[in-house]
Length: 159
Image 1 (cartoon, one colour):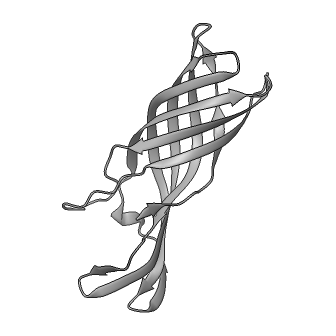
Image 2 (cartoon, one colour; image 1 turned 120 degrees about the vertical axis):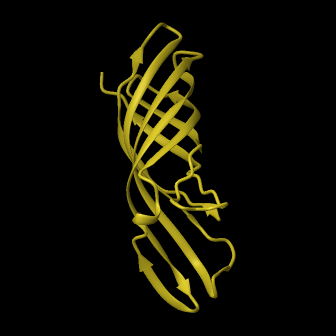
């Protein structure tokens, strides 16, 4: 499988600890998912064009190092609460669309690493890599699935 580019949005509070460091807790709704690269054979069924979309409410808590007043590096944990899921694809040539929420765990844990730039005191951008650490599938046996994604964000700071 390979990850797809999805959207996310939310709110954050930036709390300065010192001139160089701040903590930024966030509340974010994030669509995540993947698309199957190849055909997948499972118990006599051939699955093609499979696309999995997952909705999470995530709470990242980022520690930011302000290298300059405009540029920062950040890292921290992300706690996710699973909201919904939808799987689409073809099974033996027939299209299907279903919620497979019951097959997935309700909690996700990840670590984020990123950087950002503030164009003005009110407007900035950031890029973040989120590395999933927990297996998101219930009863997965030997197969492990993790939420790992890359995020690009536009930030607006209320002052």
